[in-house]
Structures are given as structure tokens and as C-alpha cells.
Image (cartoon, rainbow, N blue to C red):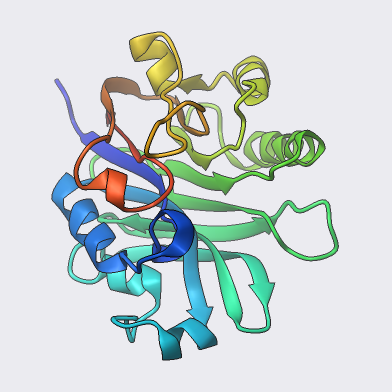
Length: 249
């Protein structure tokens, strides 16, 4: 008997702009996300604040981007800064229909500034055990990603019981598949598209997806379905394609 099914979506929203930063499409992104009816969203490149864009961009929301997307649908959210600059900051966010027991943002940048982080939340689902959810956005260089992957493994080994359900999803920037070996060998994590369809989903660039940049890894739950959300309206929104999966707990 299935006690709970969880619908999860990961998406790099490109700070609310379309490819090439030609149009501000955050309102359309929100409409598309609401239509998926996902229980948990793991979003990357979400703008926390930006003083210049708030003054110049038409339809810039009065709320922060995570509050704007979450309003009325996902009552619980946690935001973690990745990059800070004079005009503002952006980072990762977890939005959920279920409450958080706790959430923490962990700086994993090998540089002196916090350009990358892991956002680790623990969600409480009534009738089931707590679920650990980690939203990530890894760096562009191989050395940077290897260091960040090591920090991710350390975090999971020290803070997530092996019997607890676990999701790790986001933009890995890992077109060579290096994370796969580490996460499976060290943490017993599996990638939902690799298990279900035999290979990672290609998610970048959105107009002709060639590179498997985005992933949904899991442990302690059973995949029910997965989908790479191509076509309308997604191809006119961010530069990445979102991934969605459902799991039985």
C-alpha cells in the first residue's frame, strides 16, 4: 500500500530571464511551475534582490522571486545565497507544500567569496518519516566541481541517516558524468532518469538540449515516473529544461 507519493521538480530559472536575457519571464515561469502541481521545487539561479533590475525591469515583483513563485501554492520555502554583489544576490531555493523541520545553507565555494552553496532542508510529511532534500548548483570548472562534490558527500555522510529518504537535485554542470560515480559508490544514490530510462536527461541548452547538466538523485524511496519538460512553454523561458519525477515513499 502506497502511503505517500512525492512529486519533485528541479529547474535553473536563469534569474527569471529567457535565453540571452532578452525578456523578463518570471511571471510565465511561475505559471508553468504551478501547472506542474509539484510538491517540492528545487530552483537554482533565483534572484534574491537586485536593486538595478527592480527599478528598470517592467513587471519586476515587489516580493522576492522565491516569495513571488511560492505565494499561495508552496507555503514553506528556504533560500540560500550563492553569489553576492553590490546590487544584490542570487542562489538556490527549496519550495515545499510540506513544512521544514530545519534548513541550512552550506558554503562550498573553493574561493574566498560564497559563489556556490548546498541548500539542505529536512521536510516533514505526516504519516511518513522526514525527507532530506539538498538543492545544488555546482561550478563550471572540473576542479571546482570535484571539491564541491566532496563537500556534498561529507555533508550527507555526517547529517543524513542512511535509513532516511534523501533527494539531491539541481544543476550539476556535470556533462562528463563524474558525479555519478562518486554519488553512487560513496552514498548509494541513484539518478532517476538513469534508472528509469537508461541515461541522464539532456537539459541544456533549452533550444536543443545536448548536455545532461541537471539531475535528480534519490535514496530510500521508489521512483514512480520521470519527465524532462520540453516543448511549450518551457523552450521560451530559461536556458535550462526542468526535470520532474515522482516517488513512492
